[in-house]
Every structure is written in C-alpha cells, then in structure tokens.
Amino acid sequence: MSNALAIRVIRVVCTLCFVGGIAGMIVASLADNNINAVLTAGIISAIAAIVLLAVSTVSAQRRLTEFDDADAEILEHGIRRLTDAGADEHAVRELVRRAIDLGRRTE
Image (cartoon, helix red, strand yellow):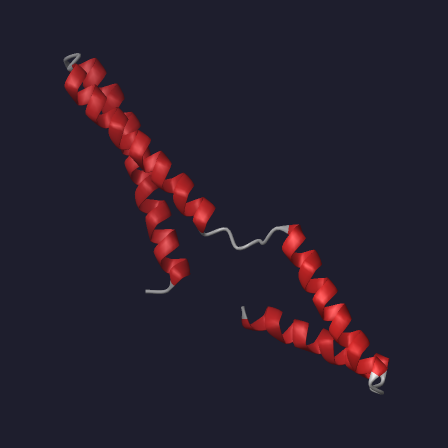
C-alpha cells in the first residue's frame, strides 16, 4: 500500500469514527441517558480527532522556508564554483532548471 493511499484510508476511518462517535453521543444521551455510553462515544471521537491531527501533521510534505533558503544558497554556491571554473553560466542555470522540472514531475 502506498503512503498516499494509507494516509487517505486513515483519514477516512478517523472521519467515520469521529462522526460515528458524535452520533453515538447524541443517541446514547437521548435513548436512556447512559453516561458510560456517552463517555465511550466521546472518547472514540476524541481519539479519532487526535489521530487525524497527528497523521495530517506527520504527512505534511512542505518544508520550512529556512531549509529552502539554505538549499538555494548551496545551489547558488555550486553554480558559482562551476562558472568560476569556466562553465557557461547560462548553460549551467538551464541545466539546473531542467533538473528541477524533472524532479517536480517525478514526485
């Protein structure tokens, strides 16, 4: 199972548990005012919400801008070294653009 599919399945299951827990709290409260059933449904909803938040946080694929800036600086330093060694700056930058485009298409 791929990561994207696993994340989607976890999100669907958590959403169903969350909505089912809320419905369970309402039904248990109206049916016979059973506090144990209401608490159980509430705990199920709370756990589903926590798991959903954790999965969403862990699966976020956007990096912090500080890391992007550091990578950009390293890349610019590498381009500068190549051009100082005699490579054509325009050709090197075009090669970097094509590599970035290829990387974006393969994600």
